[in-house]
Image (cartoon, rainbow, N blue to C red; front, top):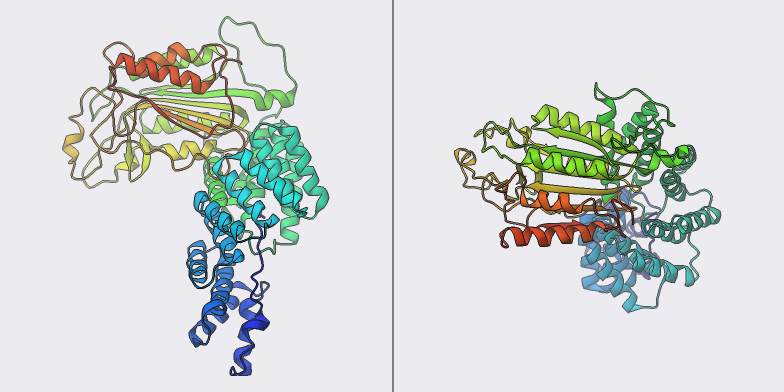
Length: 572
C-alpha cells in the first residue's frame, strides 16, 4: 500500500436523511458511500444521485468525494482529481485533499501532491495518515530526509502502520543505510506478516546485499500472499503489488543466472494492469529485460557463482571475494563512438573519443563493452550485451559519442547507417535512449549516462529532410530544441542508488566535435575521470570548467542527477 485513506466526515446516514426520497433511491446512498462497494457499482450509484439534483453544498461535495473513491479503485486518477476538485470547490475537507493528493502522487506529480497534503494538515488536526502520505510524495521526489521525518511523525502520532515502517526503511535504503532499512522493514513484517509489500522491499535489500536466494524466497512469499488475498485498501493502485513482486523476483533470478525463471517473472509482470507510475516503470524495465533474455543471442543459464570481472592488462589479479560480494559489486560500462556516417555529415573524433574513454574506464577497473562505428543492428546488439552484464552490476556507466537527436520529447542515438528519408518513420532507424534507461532501472544500481552528442533535432518543422545532410562539423544534425532532459530519473524503480545523466553541452546548443583528435568534452573527461578520490559530480564540475575555457564559452556541459549521495569511480 502506497498511501492511506481518511474517511470523509459526511456519513451515508446524514446524506440520506431527506424524507422526500423514495425507498429505492435511498438504496443508492449506501452503494455510493461505502468503501467496500465494487468500483463500477459505486460510480453508477453516485452518478444517479448527482443526476437527481437534490443535494448541494456540503452534501453534494460528499457525493463527488465518494465517486472519486470509485475512480480511484479503478486507477483512473484523472477522474479522481476532477471529482475531488469539484468536491473541494463545494466544501474544503481534509479527506478530499488527501484523496486528491494521493491521486497526484500516483500520477507522479509529487509537488502538487505535497501541496494538497499541506492544505489538509493546515485544516488540522495533524494526522498520522497525512504525514505518511506526504512522506511518500517526498520520497517520490527523492528528498529522503524529509520523507523519513514525515514517517517519524506518522509513527509518533500513534499510527503503528507497517507501511510507515516499510517506507521509512525504503528511504533509509535510498540513503545507503541498508542495516537501518532492514530493521524497519523487518518491523513492518512483524507488525503484519500477512502483507506482501514489505517482503517485496526486503527482497530488494537481500539482492543489494548479494543474497539472491533470500531475495527470491521473499519474492515468492510476497506473490503467494498477494494472490491469496488481493489488497483491499482502496488507495493501493490496482495490480501494483503483483507487478512489483514479479519484477523484483525476476531481477533476483536474472542476477542469480536463472534466466528461465527470470523470463517467466518478467512475462508475469507485463500481464498486470499498470495504472500508477511505479507499476509502469516496473513494466518498462521488465519489457527490456525480457527482450534481452528471449533474444536468439541470449546467454545460456550460468552458475551464479561465476565472476566475469577481469583485471586491467598488466595488473595483479585481485584476491577472490565471497560469491555474494562478487556478484553485486561489478562495475560495467558501455562505450560507443559513431563517426563514419554514410548519409549525414561524418564526424572525425567520436571514434577517438570512445577509445580514450574506454581506456580510462578500464584503467580504473570497469568491464567495458566497446563499440566503434556501429550500424543500427550492431548498435542494438552491443547495447543488449551491456544490459545483460548490468544485471549483476552495482555501477553502470554509459558513454556515447556521435550524432543524437530529440524527436517529440524522446532522445535517440544515431547509428552510422541512419537514412532520414521523407515520408518514413525516422525514429525506426535510431536507438531510443529511454530503452537503455529502462533496462538499467533498478533499486540497487548507480547509473551514470554521458552523452557527448548533439542536442538538436532534425525533425523540427519546417526542416526538410534534404537539410539534414548539410550539417557542419558538430554533433548536431539540424538546429532545433536539443535533447530532452528526462522528466524523471527512474521515477518508478530507481530509488536506491540513483541516476546521473551528463550532456556535453547545454540545452539548445551543439556539442563541438573539436579541432584536435578529441572533442573538447571527451578530452576533459579523459583527463579527470580517473582522478583518485574525486567524487563524480565534482569531476563533472572540473570537466565543465575546462570545456567552457577551451571553447571560450561556446559550449557549456550540463547534467541532471538523482544521485542520493557521493559516488566515486576510482575510490574515495
